[in-house]
Image (cartoon, rainbow, N blue to C red; front, side, top):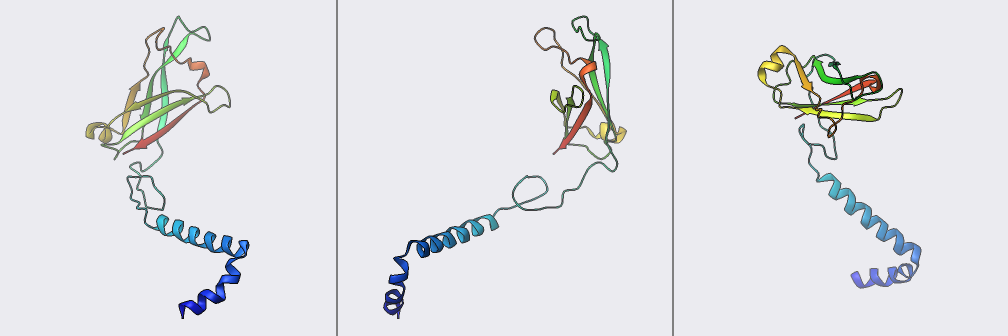
Length: 155
C-alpha cells in the first residue's frame, strides 16, 4: 500500500511548488506546536495570555519636588525627589519613575527605581524617591525640562 502511494506521489513531488507547499505545511505545524507549549502566569511576560491583577485600586498620582542648583543655567532648579501616591496594596513591589520631556517629547530624561515597597509604605499609600545627584558626575535634571512622569510597578 505504501509503495502504491509513493508511486502515485512521485511525479507530483518532482514539481517544486508541491515540495515547497509540503515543507511549508510541516514548518507551520512545527512552529504552531512549539508555541502551544509556552507557559504563561501572572508574574512572567511570555507568549500567551494571563490575568494580571493590579496592586493599585485607583490611579497612581506622581509629582516631583525641586531644589535650587547653581549648576543649572535653565532656571536653576533640578528635580530632587519624585513623590507617588495611590500605592496602597503594593507591598513587595518595585516601582520605577521615568522623568520625560522636554516639551511634547516623551524622551526619558532620568529613571529612578525604588523597592521593594514596604508594608508600612503600602499602608500609607505613598513613596518618595530621591533623584540621584552628584555634580558633575551625576548632573541634575532641570525641572524646566520635565513635562511628564511615567510610572511602572513590577513584581
